[in-house]
Structure formats: C-alpha cells, structure tokens
Amino acid sequence: MTTEQFKIHEDMIFKLSQRRSPSEVKLKSMEWAIVTQLNGEKSVGKIGETLSLNPTETLVMFNRLMEEGLLELVGLPEKDPYAPEALLDEIEYAFTVFVGPVSSILIEDTLTELKRNRKNLETKLVALLVELLSLEITSAEKRYEFQKQMLSKIKGLV
Image (cartoon, rainbow, N blue to C red; front, side, top):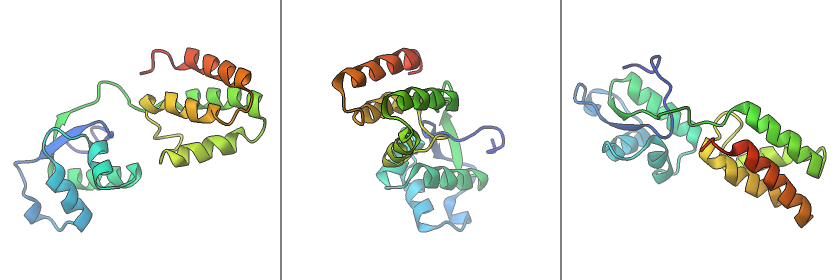
C-alpha cells in the first residue's frame, strides 16, 4: 500500500514490513529511531512524542518509511482525526465576540503551544483548545458563556 492510497495520520499503527529490511535502505538516525519503535501497538503520534518530534516531522518521516516499503499498516483510523477548519472558523468568530480583534492571534499562539496548526488539530484536542482560549477571557461570566457556546459546537465530534 503506498502513501497515495491513504494519508498517514497520528493515530495509525504500523509494524515493520516483512517484505523489506531497513538495512536495505539508507536511513537517517531519527528514521532508525522510528524503526526501533515499530511494534504494531504504538501509534504514529505516540512514537513521535516518544522521540520528541513535532507532528509534521513525524508524518514526513513515516511517509518516507512508507515510500521505502518498510511499513506495514496494522490499523487505520475509523474517521478523519482532524477537526474541520470550518469548526475552527466558528470558534474564532465566537472568541472574537468575547476578546475582540486579537482573537486570531491568541488562537494561533495557543495552537503553536499545542504544537499544532489549523490543518493538523486533532478533534480530540478541540476541547482543550477551547479551555485554553477561555482562560484569555477575564470575566468569569463571559468565560462560562464562551465555553457553553463551544460545547454545543463540539458535541459529537469526539
């Protein structure tokens, strides 16, 4: 199976392929480190965390290992693990009502703290994003209102 057939996600699980040995391929040290972590149980994201890689680096290296024929897929995610960008637009719109025009900067900063961006924010992290953003709202009453609005938007996503 090639990378053109599916997109690698952080919650996918791989094991080392029986068809090709890593010794047949010239690998970088971090790619070797990934190979040593492949056990058919750890997810792509978990391996990246273990090796202190950011999500983008992790996916790039897994794609290369896949292209080299070193990976065998053990499990696919049931659905797209990433939050729809339209949801992030809705969060930003609602957040703007409470904090004003700095909302987009605060959202980008918070995503950066999470080592994510608008395209690779997992659905499971949306609630955390909302919680972190709500800390920027000084009024407890307004903070609660923002959280309440966002809860109705993200119900059913996770």
